[in-house]
Length: 275
Image (tube, rainbow, N blue to C red):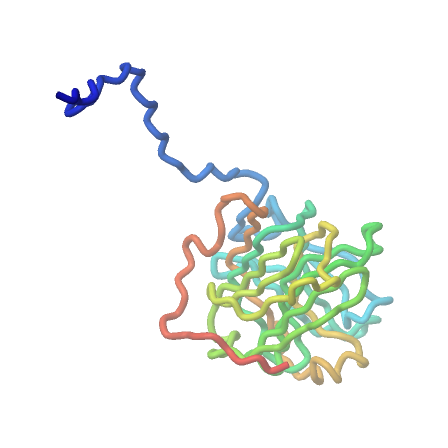
């Protein structure tokens, strides 16, 4: 008789080892909630983030000086207006606000209603340059009051721009406030309207700005040589731009943003590239 192996038909008991450790459930690391800002500009001349610019522009392309009096508290935010002046070296006064601090990579948002009228320019941008002892680096969102159904995007590195773009909007921006934003990263920039991406720089673009800059908002008209771009100054005296929220969230952070409470107008889609 052939004997079966001593493990047949049974299985020898294995040594009892310690129970395996439970696998920890993966959770998204908490993002820092510091380093950014959000302001509603309810009291613009006392705002903790921004200050009103107050200096002359005689040697610039601007058609008037920045005066704090042109920054008004209106409709729960800041209204930046352009005024006509008689008997002064410059025929206009304009309005600009700039952040106290400088900021770099991250998401910038603004809820605004740009100025309408030929000759007017509305701007929301980051900027640094020779005035601050830096190379000229800049990221822009601009509107021309002569046609507020279009939006203009631009960027500069060391004073040179690579590929600006103009887009048609599915609405007239001067009719109501909308949310405008851009995300500035070391490798590129993307611009948004009401949360929809409209334009992005190309991979490997060497013109992406690198230097931290001030956050700026302004409404202005230029000198005579600027009319070919922004149109003849036919705007109504006191016309301006309404800003109801501005925010910045550093790259990789999770700080409050204007978009947290902003509701886009239903049914408004992406515009068409016009430039």
